[in-house]
Length: 196
Image (cartoon, rainbow, N blue to C red; front, top):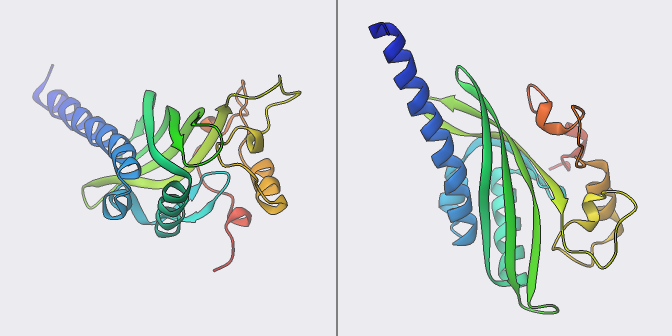
């Protein structure tokens, strides 16, 4: 290995570790309801399409912290398998997650699983999320569904009609190359972002 090849390899490993750290910090931030830490994993102009919510990083942080505070006594966002498609200062990642929450009302335990599909960018030496799409792949259901409908795969219950339609119009789980995880570059459909 030449010195130039070694240097490129070290830079790539450092970038991959920074990307991994960013994705892990998301879980810590959301589970500790730490708004400042949560915002640190996003670029200021990032858009998060969480299915049930679409908006800026600041709007997402406010929504998520409020929702989890009102709905759960405690919760964990566990991130598992993660693939990184790294190309220079842009990375596309797909991270499998499982959410578990101790509810304040109703059933004691809520669970769901899916994937965070992200486009991260390195700006001024800092890796952060520029676009995120949350895909819900499963949730405990009372019966086998006829199709995978993201609005049924959420622990957020009693959704109003507008939110159900928002979730149904967003990313749905696919088991082929039409899945959002293949989209390059990953962007959030601007028609899903509510006007400010």
